[in-house]
Amino acid sequence: MKANPQRVLSVIKIVAIIGIAGVFFGFAAIQVVSEPEATKVSFDRSAIGSITTKASSFFSDVGRMPESIDDLLANARQLNGWKGPYLSEFQAKNPWGLRYIIRYPGKHSEIDVISLGADGLEGGTGYNADIGKWQ
Image 1: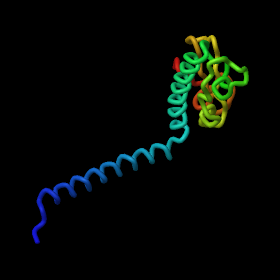
Image 2 (image 1 turned 90 degrees about the vertical axis):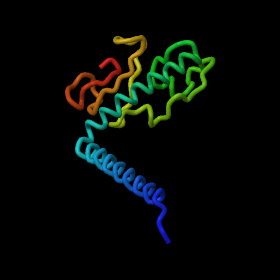
Image 3 (image 1 turned 135 degrees about the horizontal axis):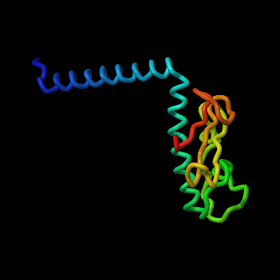
Image 4 (image 1 turned 30 degrees about the vertical axis):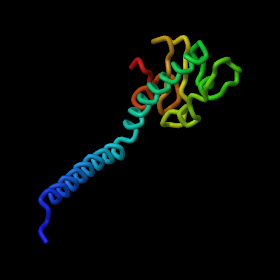
């Protein structure tokens, strides 16, 4: 029984794709393991963008910007038009387990979403530095 040349070529392609994907994911895993704090900062920046988008959804529903992260979690103020929750409790925390801060009006834009970094204190340098969408 002869092997179908097209089938053999397809199998070779699949093996090559799996091998390339394995190398890529292996490299990504090494980066995450070797630089966990840098990975957290990168994740933090993405989460801030997502929270800003969810604040825009809140604005579309309620007619004003959220005044705190709590406005995106629950309708404690009984706001008309509220269709949340816009975030889960998990999404409301930065990679170090600290809550994001919303400032409205913002200092850098209409609304500022801020992570206080690893130490949870304003200011700081390195991984303790504040992170906002303006940076």
